[in-house]
Length: 327
Image: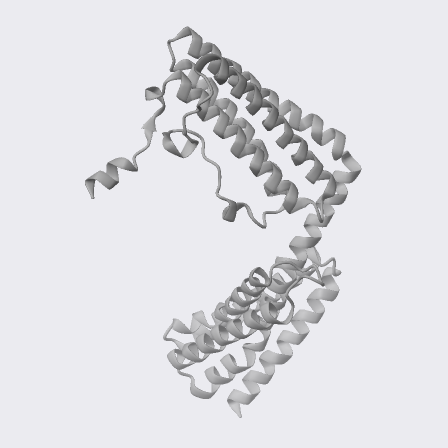
């Protein structure tokens, strides 16, 4: 066990030889090129212009890698030591492939900027840690190369994604966000907030037992959340409709459905019936106005019309629950 622990430990950067530093730079350039190509493949269908940007950035990484290999061949020969960033303590890290999948366009752009910034920063700090003149020159050249990557990225972006194309891609990303998260989440919130009003308030006025009312509200909210989540995920795989991952849509719908019902069920944890009911009524009022706000903010529904539809519908369901509970 101790051997396994020590064998998995990372080496400090200060312990690397000049050859190992150069080998580390080569492997890092190779990894970043693969990441940029993976981004290009991910974006090619919906954002072809941005995909070209990342293809060109990958080509720049390959060019730098070839320059580093030539330098290694001149100084140390043909055999390059196997050392990667995950072997070195304090070296900048990259996300694994499964954490980069299904990122939004803006997230990919931000990640690419961080990649270039962290690489340049690391090499600048490495120069300060090194006293050997040749090694300092090598690290300094690498730092300049990485800083130049940021300018190259900007130039490539200007060439392939002018403002009109970038605006179009941003609008596509916004539309995808609405289809994948906002629309199913809003449907779930409306269903959870409105459909659970009748059973919760009917149980409250029929029993006037806050604990039993809470249990009924909890079961209704969780049950509705599971039902809505599975329904959203199962009825559309997103391939033809373009609505995105069914798992993400199902989670958005299911979670918001459960939260919508729990909002006015939780007050019944208060033992006093009328206090709990008054708080629950206030929560219902807030929920309905939040739904109206989301419809206006993201779905471009006029606020007064959204408020009228939601508040009227919720009030009718609430009234039905109270009447049934008092019947």
